[in-house]
Amino acid sequence: MQLRHTVPSNSHIMEYRRAAMLRQAEKVLVSFDNDKELLLPRGFAGELLAFEAHTLPANISNFEERGKRYDVCVYVVLKDAVCKPDHLDKVSFSETNNGKKAQVTDYTMSKSATISGVIEFYDTSLKRVRFSYPFEVTSDFNYQYTTMEGDREACSQETLAKLENPTLPFPTDESMLLDAAKKLNGLVAAELRR
Image 1 (tube, rainbow, N blue to C red):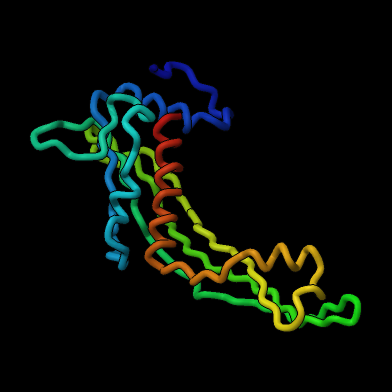
Image 2: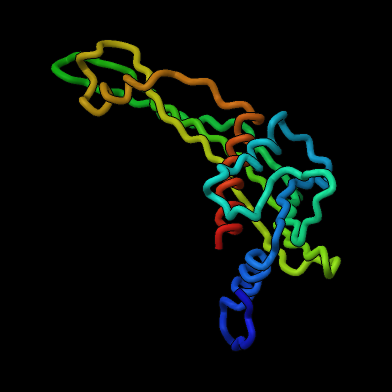
C-alpha cells in the first residue's frame, strides 16, 4: 500500500499513513518501554506483549532476534501507573415480614488501576518517531454482597438473592495492573491490525 495522493482535510490521513508504513515494512518489532522505571508487577511486560500469533500480520514480532534489521519499531511507552485504594461503601436498613425482622447491610466494593502512556511508531530508516498516540487504560473492580442479622424469613426476594454473593477480598494492586496490561494488549493489537 502506497499513498500517492492524499486529501489534507481527510480526518483519517494519519491512520492511513501509519497503516501504509506498517504494511510496507518487512519486519516490525513491538516492544515495551518503562522509561519512568515505574514499579510494576512481575509479568507485566509479558501480559502486554502476549499477542496471539494468528491475530497480527506476519511481519510483526514481539521479540527481538539478534542480527535482524527492523524497518519499524513500535514502542509502548508507559508514563504512569496509578492504583486507587480499596473503597467500601455500605448501606444498612431493616426489613420486616409478618412480624419478623432482619437488619440488612449492602456492601459495594470498588477499586481501579490506570496505566497511561504513548504508543510510538519509530521509522528506523528515518531514525525518528513518525506517529505517536496517547493511551489510557483502566482496570475496574466492582463487587456487591449483602449480609444480614435476624430472621431470614423477613428478607425480600431481592435481598435473599444478594445474600448468595459471597464475601470476597479486594484484588491486589499487582493483579489490577496485570489486568490493565491485558487490556492494553488488546488496544495495541487493534492499532497494529489497522
